[in-house]
Image (cartoon, rainbow, N blue to C red; front, side):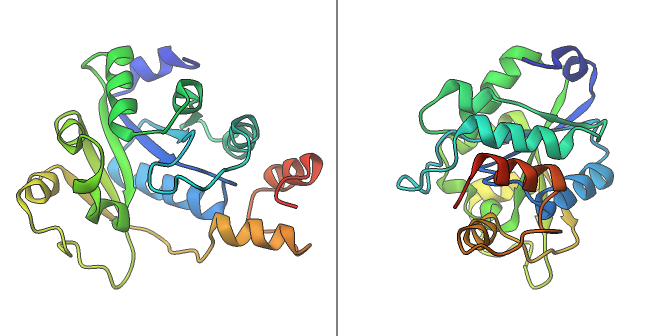
Length: 208
């Protein structure tokens, strides 16, 4: 794993999963504000191979999504990019990734799974949520209008909330889907993604 020595030396590591198809400024703002609020030493961006909740959705090739993430995060000393899920292949499950990271890094680093509120409220439905609750703490990005308790009223959710930190972040109304749509329609994506990401999309003809 690239940067393993850095990870082993870290006290708190944020694990930020997603498709990142493409990464945009909303992702980066979320990562930075959670990093600052929770006191993370490193934020690890982990692009998935295939999403379990969207089995029919085929993202851009992993090599391109990884390249865009690396271009977007290169200048941030606390941001790293991992190919742990794309290298593993198949459907990506957070519990598998966390167990693999724990095996690689040992018990030392504190792993913080970074989630949006929607994902947090559905976490009981994920594969092996008990693994995540045992191995991780949770940094949950909140937006105005979301109740922190929400629908999460069951016993697993109560156990989960004890291991959570809720972080209010600056809400940017940007989505990867809307960016892909704009590219497909020949519209500008300037200021929605980092310049290096836009350049990669244009150079490789992605989403068009």
